[in-house]
Length: 286
Image 1 (spheres, rainbow, N blue to C red):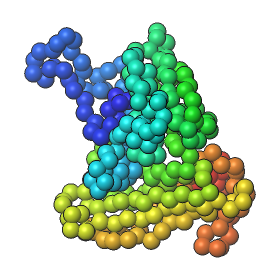
Image 2 (cartoon, one colour):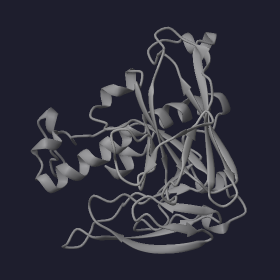
Image 3 (tube, rainbow, N blue to C red):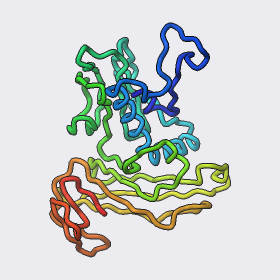
């Protein structure tokens, strides 16, 4: 399920049960028939995929335009690195890029009696955010870590901006416009940007120019300041939203001391308060 949730197409196969026969063993068709420990891990993996629909849809369009698919091998970005070409048995170096910003290394081996599996992962020579353990890691080396059933080895390239859907509940969100959007910023470089792509999701009108793009960017100022810019929407399509609720998350950043929007100072606090727009440690903008 980890690999399926972070692939271009998510499919669950019943191995013949619906046809009345199985070989060699039947698997459950409905995940809610599984013991809760497995159901919970599968549901979490699927919800994490749904949360990434804005990112995935954008990368699918990028693949349409460039020919580089959303899921691609490590050597596309690091052709001079020997480790980028390795794929060993038992899940060693079983990893790939999920769009340009995410490295995914799904668990492909059976865990021990405590449902703990060991995974060897090569981190290319850039800085990475460990999405599971919250660690900032300088790449260029191979690491070995243990993961439980619910943990998926995911590493975010520093300097990335990733749009997500808050509180994902259903895959049906794929055909809807997102009235709420979370923008996760993983600071690394002095500046970075990400262009979000959207269309009506149901027709071929995008081939006739019916779509929108919107650029999200950040710029560092000194050692403590970060300026986040939400650009204007460019383009149009039938049924597009006229307004949207956006939260901005600054991952791995120090608690916010001051905040402003359009040069106007707004209240900031480390703790949630009714009148506060910026909060830490989640560092989110309402």
